[in-house]
Length: 583
Image (cartoon, rainbow, N blue to C red; front, side, top):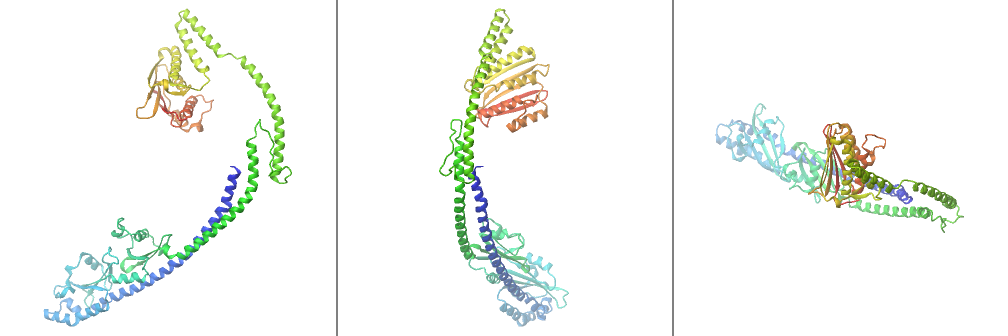
């Protein structure tokens, strides 16, 4: 890592991160404390509003006690009046005033009904109905009611605010028989007043939710409002209140209604002052950070610039440039660590210059000696001429096999030694492979047959030298030479019609590769240089690995060598290379 990067890293670790972390932590603490105080006060208001609503619910439910202890009403519901006129008189004289007074003192009541159980009781107006007219939901609630206990429920979950219904049974004076069911339908004004008491005005929204989950109208993504979506997020959160960057939510369970109240407000509109102070604090942090950054830069630059100049001079230093480093910022008599380093560096350059001159002269002598040794080596064309002489002698003696093998071997040697370039075309590679196969076929006779099938323009396909010969050699050594039965080797090359690639396949019918060794070879080919086999490994796939790496280097990352084999049936080596070379 360069010194500039180290200085930048030191700035980030020593100045930037601590300042930003402290500022962020301080801001979060202030924001969190104010938020905590605010939501707690809102929770107290919510609890007080709930206490007031409980008083209203108790006041309304007390109507049942007035009716229960009215002997005229209980006698009427038991059917003790023998005539209709007597029932009507009792209703008008004693029962109706009691009901009207209850409705007057409880304006929230929208509907007052008593469902009578006994058929003897005369149905009068719509306030006294037969129990058979009771809705199914009310009948289920009535069966579960215990003596002395009523049941509140939300009449319509989709309405906002929703109306309420109160059910409680009426009994005979001895509480031995149920004689009626009181039903009070409460308008939405009661819940509206409760909402207002919770402070749900302006940008605050209150709503009644089930204790678990959401009502269908609010759970529908197409109908939800933003506040309702936040309430759904809190559906399974049992905390009385919580807040985030966008919303503040207070909630409280309402046991009487088997529901909960959720009050939701926008945090942005509540904490204008906090945000303004936060912007001031952020500005101060930015100013402090800028001042500290400038001081750090001034201190670091005085050291870094001198070191960078010295490093730049070191990079330009070579055998032809041994000039000493001299700068107006780093005079030889400057007494500090960098000045001492500069003086030592100049002394080292002077000494290196002397050593290089001595070494250079020694290298010239060594090169001259090496050149003379090379001159004594056999020239390649001498070898070609010798092989050509052998071939001509064999033809003159009508020894066709010796002539052919000399010709093929000479072609192989010329291909191997004559060219200084590592690049050729696929046609030359295939031609060399044919020479190689001919030599081995003459050695193995009927045990080896081969087939060449080229369906590509091999003259125009460039490739590295010796990418096919190692693969064919692998098929002969590990396929044909390891078994006494005949082995067939097939070389195919074809251009894919629907893909920009060329597939070169070498297939043999030899002994195949054991599964364990096959997996090892595939792993090495997949991992690349990280799994390169050592040269000492006799059966480690060194040739396969070298071919795989050479085609990747030449054709690019899209090129690969695919190895397939079945033990006892043969091996297939496939070179997949792109048509367009991307080196």
